[in-house]
Length: 111
Image 1 (cartoon, rainbow, N blue to C red):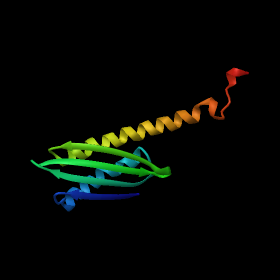
Image 2 (image 1 turned 60 degrees about the vertical axis):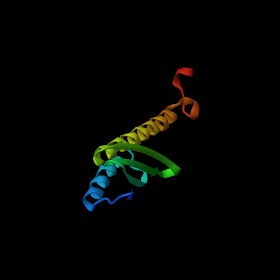
Image 3 (image 1 turned 90 degrees about the horizontal axis):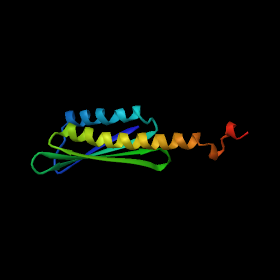
Image 4 (image 1 turned 180 degrees about the horizontal axis):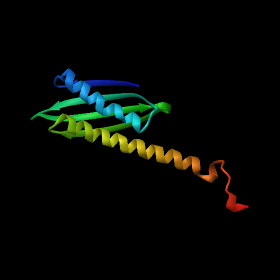
């Protein structure tokens, strides 16, 4: 899995880049089929940050989250939580689909 970090309208220090990468890499704990995570940090006026996380997974699935705050890590965590919720929703949808007897499974109660 690859993590790309970009910044707009400002410079992100090596320390901050490492901290952001460490935060978003733990998305793999929730979904190990992520291929790439792209993080864009936008420096807004008044020391505010807008963070966008785009996580691409197998089979062309994309999860996107945005967070905005005065603190960089708060914005990263907010965006990461939105991506995490999308991943959980997607996994629940896939798992429910597999358990649905109308999709090739057998229903013992019908016999």
